[in-house]
Amino acid sequence: MPTVRDATQADCPSISRVLCACYHWFGDNDVLSPEIAAELVTQCGSVEYVRKLMSSVVTFVAEQDRLVVGTATVKENELNTLYVDPTCHRKGIGRMLFDEAAQAIAAGGFDEMFLGTGASTSIRFYEAMGMRRSGDKIVESGPCKGWTIAVYSKPLKRAT
Ligand SMILES: CC(C)(COP(=O)(O)OP(=O)(O)OC[C@H]1O[C@@H](n2cnc3c(N)ncnc32)[C@H](O)[C@@H]1OP(=O)(O)O)[C@@H](O)C(=O)NCCC(=O)NCCS
Image (cartoon, rainbow, N blue to C red):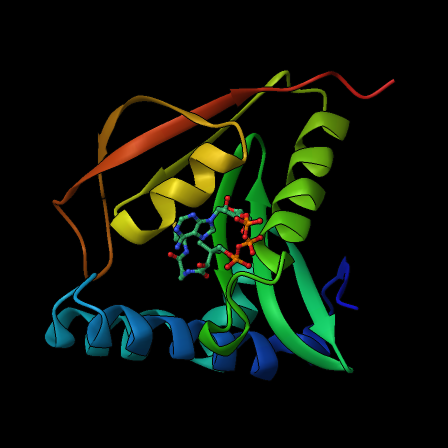
């Protein structure tokens, strides 16, 4: 049974492994070109990148059999990243991470959460999580700089 917990710095190599596996999966499944996928691995997949990212976001990991198989990050009212190892898709792990992230956002006093995604394969998932498309935005940095991506939002019940 998978579990979700707060990440620690010791999880950085495992989170990096999950991110890189997903970026390769994007390239192998026509979500992104192999070239962009390879750039993501280089620019946004290293242990150093994860370490830096973790200093500015709240990070969760999902574990199964003591192995990190997924990760999510939250900044204020935004779900920044949500990645599940491709060998573990459709086992409810994404939902567990999403629920934890939504709870953290609500606990921060927000009554709505947002995310931006360019990954067409994740849209059915986000819709299943109750998110609805609310607009578009331009990616400001990284390998996908300049791309228009979809923004999704979901009202939240405030934490009591
Ligand atoms: C999107 C992602 C996080 C979903 O994680 P997951 O653990 O596979 O999702 P879950 O098993 O929790 O799915 C929950 C529900 O979402 C929906 N869903 C998930 N993946 C789906 C898919 N590929 N097609 C249609 N519906 C899907 C289903 O309703 C599913 O419930 P069900 O399995 O009982 O039918 C995962 O596929 C992933 O990491 N993809 C690569 C990275 C990515 O695209 N991240 C988002 C970047 S913004």
